[in-house]
Image 1 (cartoon, helix red, strand yellow):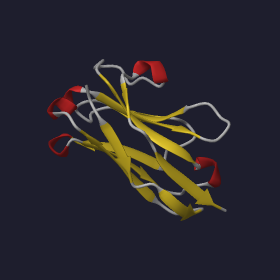
Image 2 (cartoon, rainbow, N blue to C red):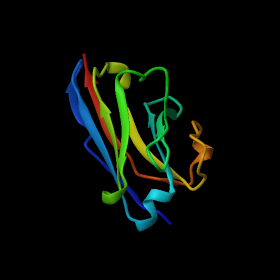
Image 3 (tube, helix red, strand yellow):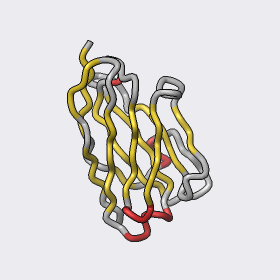
Image 4 (cartoon, rainbow, N blue to C red):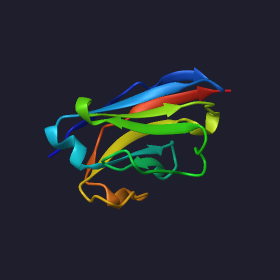
Length: 125
């Protein structure tokens, strides 16, 4: 079992930045592929970004590429999402997720085994 807890969400104006964090409970954090997803009201959950266990590979949704950066610190059992150039369309609850399948940067919810409760990001225009 891996418990994930997100933090860092909030209200920001368009064009602003936020950094989300996801703290994991398990020492074997480094064995997991990690990802960020988001869900806006009335919409389906959407893939945002994923990162391999070694940080050697990353994957982004087209809608956030060049604006968001995913990273991880295995020594601190923490996943990050740096979000720059935020737009009102980025408003959503952001969830981190962990997958025990290495070597695959999944972009679907079914690719992940563990989920955090989420943190709200609201971007005003």
